[in-house]
Image (cartoon, rainbow, N blue to C red; front, side, top):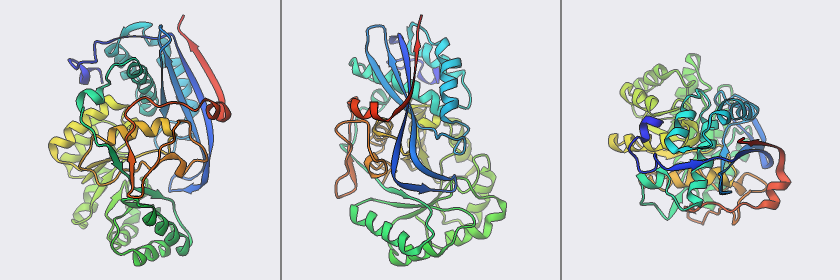
Length: 382
């Protein structure tokens, strides 16, 4: 990351650190959500608040799950990594590039690194300084088109009803979670009821070499895109699947942890699209490098989410607003899946499936933050 920003306008900005506050929040979901990874009943999130020597603060959200089943990160581990391996090495006073150099030493915890970086840049933006996203892509869309990601279904009628509701609400794309061993009846029912809608499938890396028939049945349903069919390291299987089904559009998610993964996957011909999660690649510095490369190579890209609160979702929306060619992003407003949000005013979607861009630092709802906080750790710079 430090190499990537050398020479950029913000890299030599002087920053300071007085303390980091690690805040764990747990917010119930509107309804349980089931994917190949497992069920979710609540959003357990880690928030990181950076406060500088002048008292200026900024906040970031760690998008990892409470378990290590999406990538290797989990909330308790993220807290330990920040407390024991990041915070002690952050300069009390230094440059942005020096902070990036500290974060670059941490391997395998991109969501965690991104939350610290987001908190730093949020504090800088609140003080009137641009961040790397603004510096690289000053022009933005005023509204971000969004799609919806729906869970695994067992009952066909439930699947059809949920997709029908999504279509009426105006979502630009519908994506269904899939997993080996599932019943195909809900998928058949949805495709029969909605033969023309952009319908995608997301396997969350749950398939292997034994699931070729399962994947061929998915392809027969004419998906708009098939996302992450195989585990992150099995790009060879992606190449083989595309060879068997040349018309299939493959999107990679978990496989993409940085620019290097994009380069390799593109050179192998293992993907057609990228689901860019800024946190999954270590934050907006690396995201900017990927966005530049994808634009040069004309690789379609859209922004995905991890069911964040409005804090993390706003970061995703800011990135998505710099991708004018994307048809839809998995960035629906948090109140569509959480019983409460932490920002005010709450993010909203209009009837055409677009979310207005919030390109200014969010305002926190302190009462809701207090209500849903389950633990807080204060790390003071001595």
